[in-house]
Image (cartoon, rainbow, N blue to C red):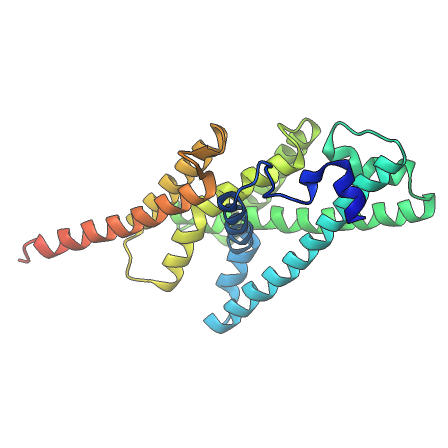
Length: 269
């Protein structure tokens, strides 16, 4: 399969052999991959719910290994799909349609039905998790922060409304997506990694840091990361993920130094 995949396009199996990938972009992709694992809403909620730090570390590590294994299998499946469609003389212009076309036009009906049911089950479980997480996050972390005296019943209504609203929004976007699934996943990975990876885990493990510094690191890291992604993906040869994470680290260090110096120079009555 690998030989046939290379015969279709040699760059398929040689990412550093003159293709669009360089060593720094591959490092950036690895950072974004693990950044997405560590900063997903469901992971943050799980971290807050675990009984101690050791349990949290185990959950994150185990989740990273499992997801990495699935993505390796997915990459192999993608290559196999490309080879199968090529051998069948089928050309697909939209990469998102490659696997559905394989199921409908190449696989036997029984096997294709089983595969479709498996995919739908995975989509449903992931969607349930994401919608539940976003409802809880919006209600408990944002709404409750600005309205701390609201009752649990009222917060439940807010959570349900948020879940329905974001569900409808996601459905509308999926009907006419702004890019392929690869583009959307890449954008999400850059956003989560640059905006949350460093600030969230610094806040978890370093309780003495000022909240304003954490918030500034999130905002500026995300702005530089997403801004670079939208304007070409690199700035001065530095990929968006690496740049955004670097800015987040600089803001954390510089902000804490400035606040520390300010507290030392403030007179005590």
